[in-house]
Length: 58
Image 1 (tube, rainbow, N blue to C red):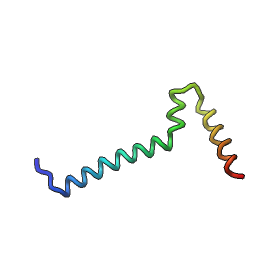
Image 2 (spheres, one colour):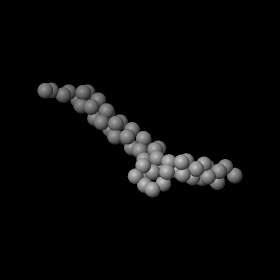
Image 3 (cartoon, rainbow, N blue to C red):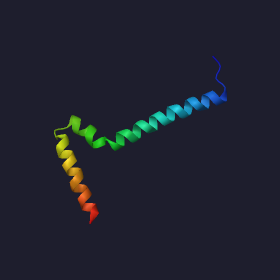
Image 4 (cartoon, one colour):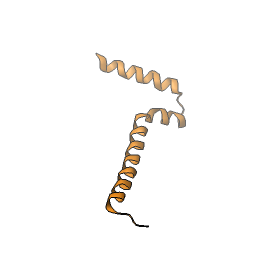
């Protein structure tokens, strides 16, 4: 199977975009992912997020 430079570039970009996209998703939902394995409930995490956002509003 022959891969010319254009095809190799597209494959490389797809792999890198997938990895970076997964990293962004994990970072955005990290507290929810962490709460699945921890002792805290998801409701507690949401309450903490609301409290943290109130601190920065003033």
